[in-house]
Image 1 (cartoon, rainbow, N blue to C red):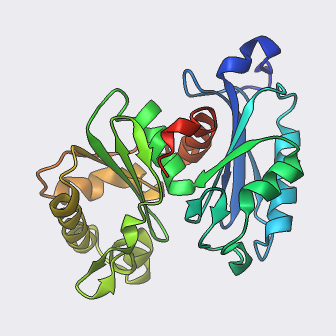
Image 2 (image 1 turned 90 degrees about the vertical axis):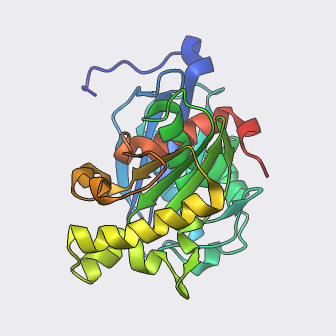
Image 3 (image 1 turned 120 degrees about the vertical axis):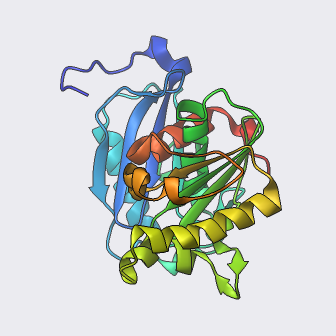
Length: 266
């Protein structure tokens, strides 16, 4: 986006939402036109505060939202976070303070920002964004979105409806939490070739096929930009394609889910 991109006006409120993506090292956000998936502002990013404590992260999110400029009062705000989220409460914590476990996160952010928000799992947001604006746009059936990074994030979407907190990276295969074997971090940690890593991914995605019989796999995470090195090595019955939104997926998904609370099946 260029510096001259106009700020959204009050007339645009129905399609405008704010998406915030909180990670272990960075917090990203933008104002989004949810009808098209277009970022209406430059994507802003601030470092996640050291230690990742709730109050510190909430204040950083407040600073980031302020940096986006004028936001219509009626515009919804979606925030995604690396944790299992149930009714606004974070039930786990990945790469942030353990103080988030059992914490009423949604209430904290609503108090800090002074407005209602939707608070969701980060993989769910990224998956919903990909299914709505990315490679799976307009496709029905069961779509499983996986993000390959430090761990394996996952999202289940059936006929456009998100089923939250799937946590399929933690499937036990061969007696181990399989994201410890098949996440991209395992490839880097063990210096695996693309072929050796793909052999582990084959086991993982075959297991997902047996359990869920999906119509489509979408593979995200930073490594998806190198998809030509490993996806063609997989032999699956289910089509498997790279994600297209990459670093914007969480922002777009969080913004959209803030306007579609009925899409969260809890």
